[in-house]
Length: 204
Image (tube, rainbow, N blue to C red; front, side):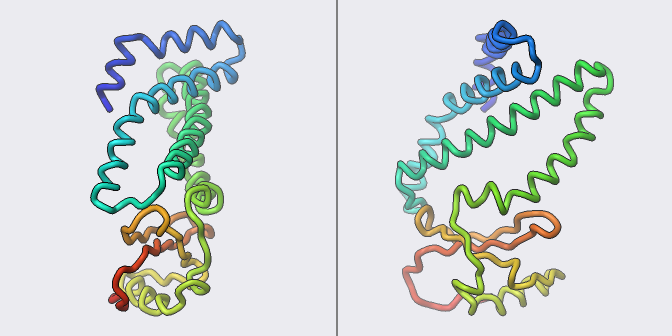
């Protein structure tokens, strides 16, 4: 990754994109949405061979079962989200630098905090459904709920069943997955269900 940045610095790619954006428009907001996508897409394309290699290794060891078209679609969606979020953050960052060259880092940090909370809050509703199919765990695997509640209770967390979701991961990976997502009222526990080769109960 650092090699990519070194290459871009040596080629003065960011400066070229900046100059091009300034020639297109004098509006700072529009400049950010020209400069950032160009730079982020360039980094993504440079990193694409490594991403493909990583996916090929996962396929070799049978961990990934996702088709290449599906993988490419997920890659494109992740890049689009990165560009949208990155462009907004770049605009905010440089707006703060222009406002205060001494305290821009503090102002940027203050603004970034509510943005991070907002993104984490909407992630279960907006971002994650773009990549996986979700359904209430009570509708897909209700027999897992009591055992999971025992585990979360031992950890000091009482998670209601309506906040437990089933995530269809079997079309992409055979790895078992469980994670917590969201913030406040959007907080949910998601459990990836893979194709079981052996029929035996899960032990908790």
